[in-house]
Image (cartoon, rainbow, N blue to C red; front, side, top):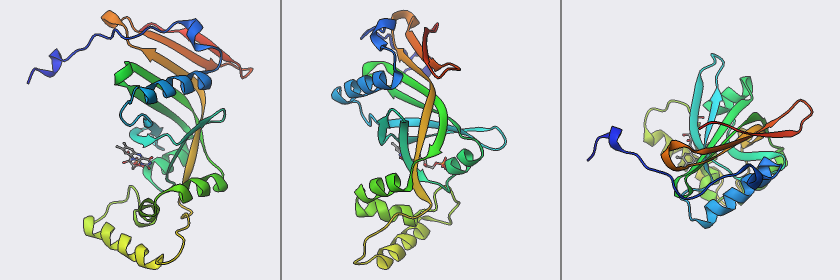
Length: 213
Ligand SMILES: Cc1cc2nc3c(=O)[nH]c(=O)nc-3n(C[C@H](O)[C@H](O)[C@H](O)COP(=O)(O)O)c2cc1C
């Protein structure tokens, strides 16, 4: 194996010009997402979510994007998890997508709020029975003694819901990040990448500018 310091790649696939992006970053994100999906990017909807705790300490983990519209970017999780606790004290958050097959990165920053209970119910009920049970069985982010604890919880809820509809637990649902800054990054040769950023101004209009790589 070569040394980590020697691993490098030159990006040659595409370019990104101010004129390509139009005036709305969500519309352009949808275009890039469709291209990433068509290019069979692995786990195309996986994104890094960064949150901040009550000591201003950042925490990052992957979650799955489940919806995108003009209101923002939606994912689902346990509201009592560490990320849920972070978001209850500080709604500022950031998302990062990396699509290596297309040599692209998208960074999104904004404020997060819970989606409506009806939206959470609709998505929850679309999930397979096993995933729905998991939401009941896993006290996400809590320390547990061993794996057997989890399996016992799963069995307990399996029996509890036997022959019944598994409804959404109150502690599980969606969050939506409403963006105020979105940056599109296209890898270019010799580290002279293209970075075009949108930011909401004080009149709620998107302003677009280029950043040095
Ligand atoms: C590919 C992938 C997708 C994931 N999707 C989700 C998700 O949609 N929701 C979720 O709560 N956790 C998801 N996770 C697990 C999280 O990364 C994390 O372990 C969990 O949410 C607990 O994070 P927290 O303790 O910071 O709250 C995913 C992990 C991976 C690797």
